[in-house]
Amino acid sequence: MGPLVSTEWLSAELGRENLIVFDATMYLPNEGRDGQTEYLRAHIPGALFFDIDLVADPDTDLPHMAPSQGRFSRLMTDFGVTNDTDVVFYDQKGLFSAARGWWLMRLFGHDRVAVLDGGFPKWQREGRRIASGEVAPTPADRSFSCNYRASLIRGLGDVMANLETRRELVIDARPQGRFMGTTPEPRAGMRSGHIPGSQSLPATGVIALDNTLKPSDTLRELFAHVGADGTRQVVTSCGSGVTASLLAFAMHVAGLPDAAVYDGSWTEWGGRPDTPVAGQTGSDKDTTHP
Image (cartoon, rainbow, N blue to C red; front, side, top):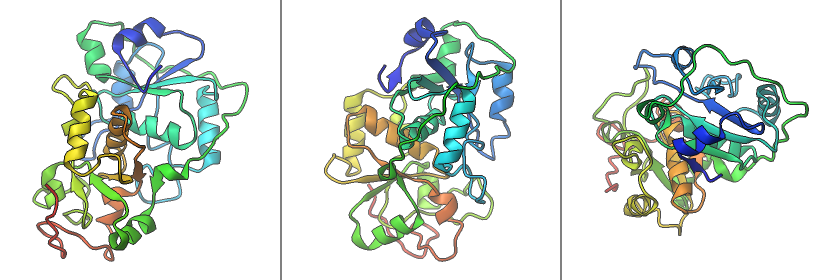
């Protein structure tokens, strides 16, 4: 099982004993939709709902920050995930929040994880089986053991320090208008603009019109265009760490070195008064992005 699996592969594998499928749908605050409600209405048979706001740190005001190792281990064990389980994530948009589940699994040391290419929209278009209602997990008979990879995550202090060193390349997955500060943020109270020195590569740019991931050679070209050619550590950012995970996933599929995710992303950076901001309304008029 590679990091990206097809609907044909998943259809043939459904029901296998050591395979768990998760619907990891999350909608933005301004979309007026609820991922779990949509899941209950229709989902891939046997899939469990992976609530990104549950598999998160409950002791912060920032949305869906990565949880502690203990919390992640307990939740995965409750879901029935062991260190020998193959895990596949999908979402109801095609490719959006599923990669957040993929990134969390890898952050805590689990590499037997994949994302469904094209997600639920492709599954539905192909007329594959659909179920409704809640699926009750079967807790694992042994605890999920974490092997935390600090190299895959960055915090506020890391990104602040990088403003001076510029050792790491920050790539922003938000739409261009939000990056430039010409479009308001979907979360109230956020300043507009971007982290000084960061580059813009909207997450939609790595997705084809049919909601599948673009081919690896195309992905490598897209990342190379913003300076991510494999010679410099990349840190991905977005609004709240979700589409940043999608860029990290796309880099992984493209065969590029693993990116780290700035977990707080713009919700943290743009919500503070002490962080410099570049763009249309920022104090730093940095416009070095392509």
